[in-house]
Length: 197
Image (cartoon, rainbow, N blue to C red):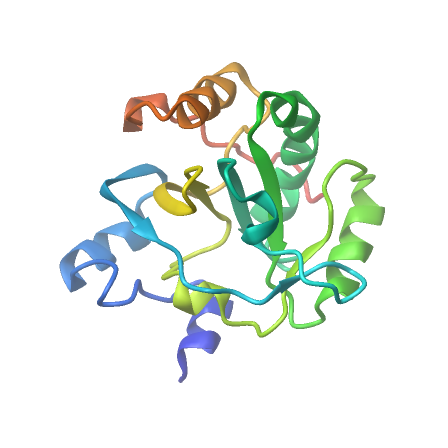
């Protein structure tokens, strides 16, 4: 079974270059905010919008970014999208970008259809054009959200669905914007979907 198949079934392990095998096994079972001891450079990704135009992290140069990786077949991901949609107009005026990166095999079609079904109006469509983001970023499960500093480095990640539209998330993202050290205690609460979105 290849890595992409493992990711799709939610059983992928983190790459050896990201975490040790023991830490990778632990991360598979854990959810919440994981802060890196040192910022990590991000690999190049081919991210495009629903028109096929480049829409990657370069467009946010000099700004911190919350980059959420999701897929339309992932129920916790879809349940989390409305909170991200509400977060975007609250935090972007303060200088933090919000990107929801769709990993669907159907590309922009899956993202556009999901946004329409949920009434998502603030999030732009971003798709993993080459379908490699989960693997190269070492994402064990979806949803996973990367917190990227203004220099384009991953400083932390949140594994699992979060309540991104609450006060805790705003505090965390304001600390990211200010370049302050992040701490797991700053995590927004895990979101628990109550119904099938």
